Image (tube, rainbow, N blue to C red; front, side):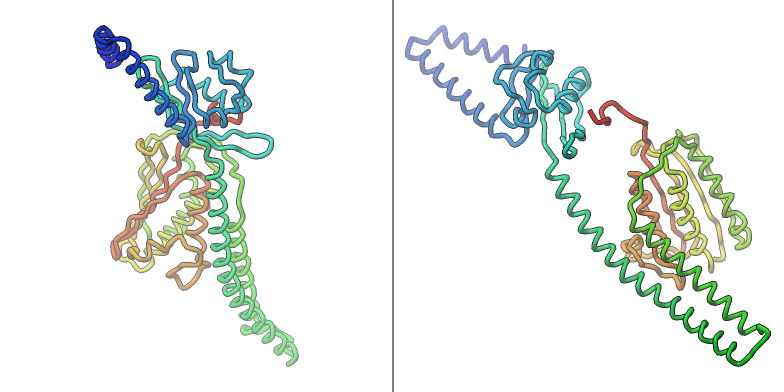
Length: 385
């Protein structure tokens, strides 16, 4: 027997033993409890809608505000359509009506600005269903503002680093240009080895300056991903073809392990740069190692619903305090480079909605694992309504 059936049996049994005043007191007591529950229901911060089968039983004031519902009468979903202002969210609720319980954030694209809602559907009992609506638009705005503040702070760090890094090659270019000018003033007709070396230095420093600027722009500029449906194993194998000559030159052994994994939507050229940065980083870490092995693995991570790419080396390893800083702009332990490589890698992976994990032991090696969530194309629930 259901709890509510037992409750009604107790009430009926009690009514049979009540006189007129007792029945009046019971009814007043029930009415008072109902008023208290209604006050609590209306005072909730979340929008609450209760449905039974295809009919809306009730909703609180917050739900009416969120939906822009202009009536106090409830009925089936179709009957209520004409009273709804927020059509985007209402269509989502109608779609979810026949689906399983869910808790998901939805974006409704309106003319002015997007609105963000957290929607939870929960079956209470039998055909009684509770919908909880939370307007997260203001929260998202604050998060966006905070992200902008953090981006500005990061760009300030980048800018100071850029100013310092550009100054060094410019000084070298200026110095060697003066040396060439002095050599010319001394009527040197033939370009001897020293002058040729000056020219080579200028060329090298100019290229380095261009690389610094390119890295800065890549790290600072937002990018619209150009997604294509790719075989991840083939993508990784193509990358390794680019670095195999350098691996052979540096006597680094290559181990490859590929599992049968699903295709995924990626920005091929963009992600290519991120993985190449990790491979180059691994090669540099093994420069002084007696054992030089680069391991590249791919697999499908069921828990994350993601494709995984691991780049592991047998290099010098990274200390725990360095791991905390490794993705920061201009943090580097190398004598050369811009210090932006891993910052760019992190940015690219995050823009793919992915994550990167590091495991390292000083003196033994390091493993970087990149997880890219499976993007299953366009879903009805993710499309603007």
